[in-house]
Image 1: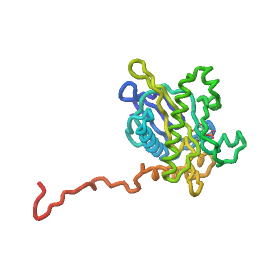
Image 2: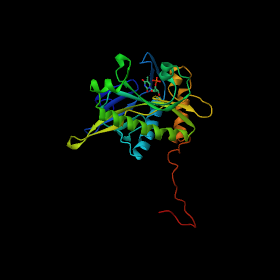
Image 3: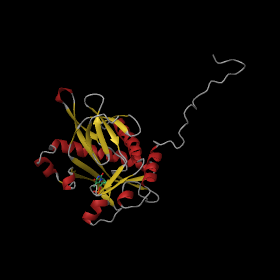
Image 4: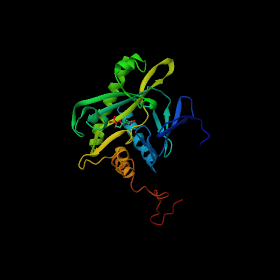
Length: 262
Ligand code: TMP
């Protein structure tokens, strides 16, 4: 497995060369980092859960017509994806004041925002992913005005869908971060697609009834119980069967009236 060519290693994932040109394998690690990797831990099983949760969300988004890089899940930790040129922006959509928005603008954490807000951060660890405006993005050529429009529309569409999906399982989608990539097709056609992952690592998810945090803030704020929270998100989404059927317990041919199975 590890003889595959490694294309890129990030804080929580590794990208390997895929089996066909234009494909990659996205491997989910157990590493949890926060504050630009100043805080780091290995959390056993996190990668497996994020692989499943992200697969589920990308599939559901694909079904409603949101183009994504996802092709299929390969195993517990890996998925096959289309190779895209990542637009160097972290696109954050917020529904409720929390995190850096609450502290930057002095808002009460948990207060509903007048409408969903989209923010852009320049993906650059050395600079700590600074917040940028459309002016910066177009002036420095990270994306064109038309691409920014498309990214914003897609991010809001993803938000509308995810707010409903999570509300249906008793979870408030406070905010999340997504990334987009350029997918080059035949005839030099280019499409913008949703890339990276959507998992409790890059969302704020609060239980509707208790207000409990079910996301990476459990790690950032030393609340403990991260794996249990991610498991609960997976369970409510229906991607974890609590009692997986043991191997070999499939249908059995039963002979009746003395007839023998051949
Ligand atoms: P923030 O409130 O810290 O700016 O985070 C907004 C959302 O983006 C939150 O759901 C967590 C997510 N996020 C990431 O996925 N990666 C990051 O590096 C940061 C800072 C936030």
